[in-house]
Structure formats: C-alpha cells, structure tokens
Length: 298
Image 1 (cartoon, rainbow, N blue to C red):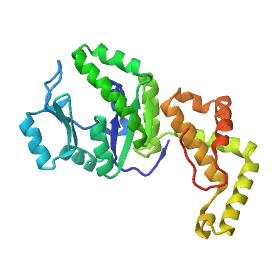
Image 2 (cartoon, one colour):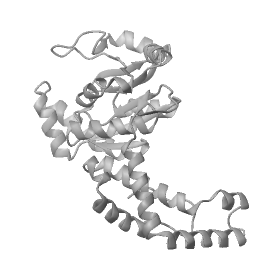
Image 3 (cartoon, rainbow, N blue to C red):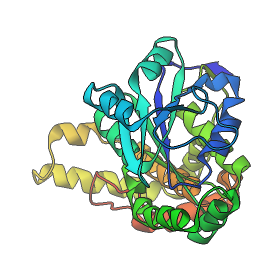
Image 4 (cartoon, one colour):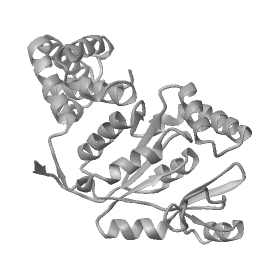
C-alpha cells in the first residue's frame, strides 16, 4: 500500500429511486480505510417500519423544513410525491472538519444543486441494468402504493439522461460489482487514507504497454499533425509545447475504457488483456488525430 494526498470529500451518490443506493452504501460503510461518514437527510415523509429519527432521517414537519430552507441550513433539497427531502449543512461540514469523507445519498434533483453549488464534490450516478429491473426492485419493497411506484418510474426516465452531469456513472447490476467499482473510484480520487494500487492504475499500465507495442506510428503522426497546426497558427506555441501525444493517447484510451466499464460491465474485465486489446483497437477509430481535444464518450 502507499499513501496519497488525502483531503476529505463530499461524495454525492445519486440515481433513480430503487437503484440500490442504500445497499451499496451499507457495504461501503464497512470499509474503514475509506473513512466514510453518511449524511442524515431531513424529510417530511412518514417513517417506514424500523426507521429511527436522527439515524435514518431527521423526520420533521413541513413548517420546520421550510424554515430550514429560509435560513439556508440545507446543502440541497427537493420535493417528491408531496414530501420534502434535504441535507442539513451543519452535520456534513462538521464531519468533514473531523477528517471524514461524507456520502450524500440523495435524489437527482438535490444532487444537481449540490454539484452546482458546493466545492470539492465527487459525484457518482448509479444506474439500474434496465428499467424493468428497476421496476422489479421498487415493487419488491412492498411498502408503496402502485401509483407511487409509477411516479418513481416516470421520474427515473427523466433522471437517467442527467447521468452525464456526474463525474462517474456506475451500473448496479450486482451490489458486489458496484461496490468494487465505487471503492476504486474513491481510491483513484484520493478519497481514502491509505490505498492499494487501484484498478485504474493497473489499467493505465496495461494501456501504456498496448500503445507502446502497437500504436507508436499513430503517436508520431499525431505529433506531426499538431506541429502543422501550430505552424499554420491554428493553435498557440504554448498549446503545442504542452502537448504530449503519447501521454494524451494513453490518458484518452484509459479514461474511455474505465468509464465505459463502470457504466456497463464486469469490473474484472479491465485487467483481461484480450478484452482490453479489443477495446483499444475499436477506440482508436474514434481518436481525432488532427486535434488536441478529445471526447471520452463511447
């Protein structure tokens, strides 16, 4: 293991209702080296069986919630199916002051506010494998009326397209796979006190080997093309001097493969050489070798 610079983070974990945020976060909580605390949300809805005030939620009246809004005591808040949900600022800031990473397990509307307004936010969007699977999970709760479930599914279809506003998109096909992915993200983002070498680190090393073995011709041509752009005055001398074609190609390929696998696939595939060679081969067609800027979307 090795130490990296550590700074407490506000970690926004969001996604459609029923996607499995609670199950995944319960598993993450057990990993002490992630140094996690979990925000306790405030809500005006009624407690479900087994929920404890101050542990699962702060259950308040509508009047109390609206007072907290007026006094700017909430990081974010949203209203859904007639109830308010929000994150009290004081608790989160105190936990971060104590050196903890704080997970905000919140609805998409509230997450959008936190991502926009707060500093030092790490944002993760959880995706269901399919909408049918999401419906099955919601129905399995057996705690809500059919019309409420329908409202949640309708809302999910509006929320999924917003996934691109987040730094990471993770598919929750199984809790184990999703937890492994999220743990690697937190380590990659230095949101852990002491870390193992991450899957991302290992992936980048493998991509580097593939590039050096198979694609240096393209690196050399990319460098030539960018020099031509500089000579024609289409980019600045500073941009040209800061451009490293080999590093740029490795970074672009690594990011693309990593993010695609987070959103769809078994995390262990990232270290499968045959799988990785095939992915890189296909992605090479998407690299624009006449531009410095690249897209990571697959």
